[in-house]
Length: 248
Image (tube, rainbow, N blue to C red; front, side, top):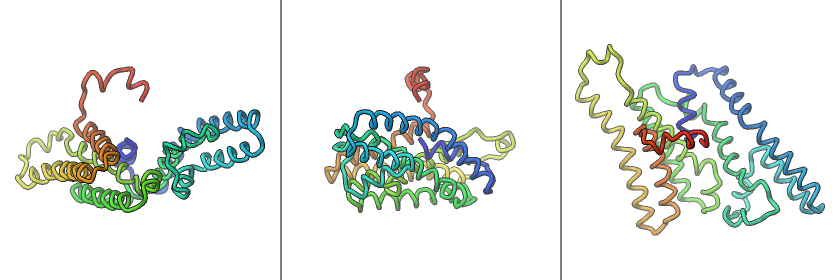
């Protein structure tokens, strides 16, 4: 979802310092105030009810969450997230995902905007190449690193960016374009841009299932499924229900 959203935000923007500063300012304005409020409330609670040792421990990870490096803690210490959440003395374990998100935002304008090729078809292959490198990295490292590392998660962000690219290519043509019949080459390229990512997705899930890696298969299926929903722009009563839109 973030890869899709950031691609949407940066689309047709000039590659300029003002574009990037405006992008970062909006992310900071949306995220920092609420995060700092949560850190403040948790710190007040821990100072009132924790002993000196636990309070020092809690404040250390409060700083990690405020600096958006909570995921580096789990990565470096080889900790399993689902065991970590059983510890009631660390309020900030869940901020690992926000840390990954912010670290992606730091490099997103460069990777998704400044470095992308100008040709539409080349953009898709550029995105697929970066996503493939990230995916291979996630399979080569240890499970905790694959879970916490931004680089190992980069392919999931790129799945959203690819979905945005495919959806944009399916947009309604202009009146001028309607007067010109599509060439066989253009039709072939359009079909290929759908077939290639779909084939890769199915192969990845099949390989996970073949090696009995159900957790990875489930995670991959969710990522590709979300990307497919974005591309197809389904408007079923469930997906467009007002309650779900409010929840986000």
